[in-house]
Image (cartoon, rainbow, N blue to C red; front, side, top):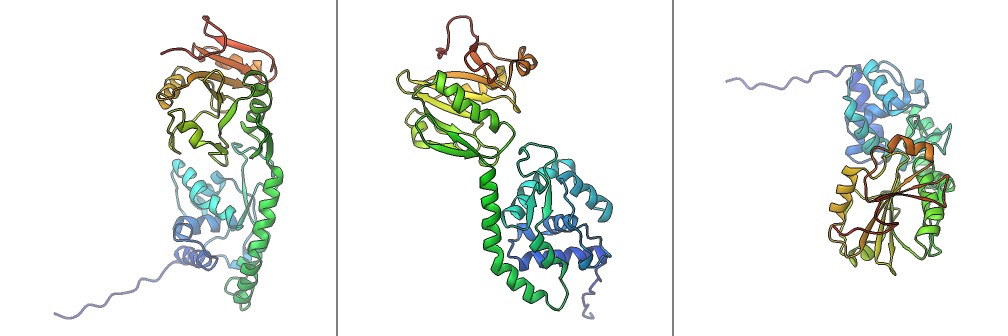
Length: 326
């Protein structure tokens, strides 16, 4: 039997460009997940670099995730399913931003996290480096870029920190939340609702769109019999009233809706081992917003509207603010 030799199939322009993008990501120090084919394609989309284009023809458009996917469909015949958008955002774009490769919302840095206009753009210094790929001075420019990168990352981190919303906790401490979205309402909950209705309360949890656990007092919750992890469907704010032994569970309904009958059961199940009585609050931006949810809000809960901070609406009929025995 004659010995067969493998025949190397030449790569086409698309495969070649993807391989080059992966090489660049490797040189920039990205791990295998951030230098796989998906991440290489995302980089090419952010540069609007077609398969037959040269690297010095790269552009710097501002693109939303859906626009990235559409461009790849048109230029690289890569048809990602709609449910892939979250994978691209969480496992490629997020890390690109953290590494300083892309800038988020350069046109509007304070854009709410849940805005459909959230967009990405290649960072200027990274763009200058990548556009020189395959040129004679690329190696030297790569060394300079990597040497300057920590300073660039610090600069963008400081800018992001300046945009965050400061929140003064009842005990005098302070945390900062990402701007926009429901976090604006969460600030009002802490500074308006808690001041009036949970005085001297201990804030055990605050959720944040950028950081799931902006405040997460695991020991405080555990002392009340509550064990949760990152997979639990936590409410947006949890406050403990020690003198009453109440655990106040607050949902910011600006984006996720109020405590309806389904959410009421979910929260009861999540906090089923609590030794403190459970109080359920739906916090809404305004009474106008409340109109949309009147038919959904669960009985045995309370509603607070930020535009009328001195009043509560009781969906119970038996008593005012307080827990119920199940």
